[in-house]
Length: 386
Image (spheres, rainbow, N blue to C red):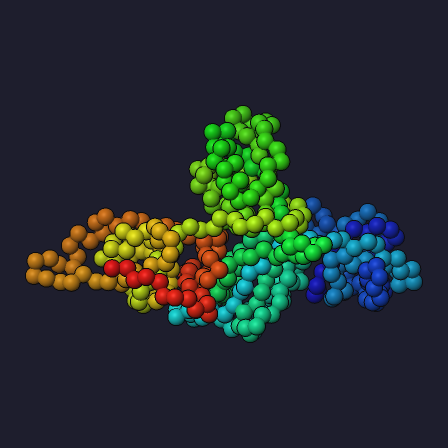
């Protein structure tokens, strides 16, 4: 049936096989022919020859129909005011996987296949924007918040794509000569004993309290409403879960563009980087875990520059998680194996995207998530751990 359109008949009737005009206010209308008309019937739909005013219909035949178009009588063209789609507020880059382990997991690897998939997504994801960058293998994707974009990445991952994902950044605008950034209205319902932690968390992210009081219909719960820069929303979900032991319910929506809020605190700890390529060993991980929290298990394949953990101090540190124990005639390689090994920190796609800094990337494949330093952003080599 091709591309389908959905809308409500405001006046007159929509008939299958009829020639119509399609357009928006201020634009030249184009002619099209309605092929089929469907109305919704309970949880399904049924085909009809004609739909009358008030019916919500689905139709085919107009291949280039978009949000905001009006289907009109070709002899009486009076387009209605277009539906406004909210502009994107967050952008990130998606590109070809260039890590040393690329091509081992997925089957959709080239820039052409990635671009075709993004173009296909534009047909149904009306708030999404895709543009080229200076690098032919990397595309800039803009959407309505970090979750909007990570849902797309997760969907592509499950379809067999391998991607290199950059950190999310907000889209700023200059309004009346002043740099402005997007703000969101955030509503949080949290147990009263944890409300102080939430207030502190939102205040540190430049939030402005709009309302606070007991939550209606929920005893022992507090309702908070804040106006927070979208920059401050990046990474907020995991921090909120930690601060409230998972008991907070948070909802957010775009509010407006306001003057830039100034610097917002970011991650204050560095990363632990793999010193060499190979398979991680229990001995290497036990030595490295003294430097911070690790993301990997023994036997995990790593490569040089891969982020394997969180450094307990600011600044990056290289660690040799592939180091093996030297054998002697007194001790065997397997003695006290796994003794004192700390379980790794499990990172989801959202957690990984929130964690990375501007000089870091997330490698996304159907079965693996890896973080690494961006090789295109040359920096001084991090300190080597002993």
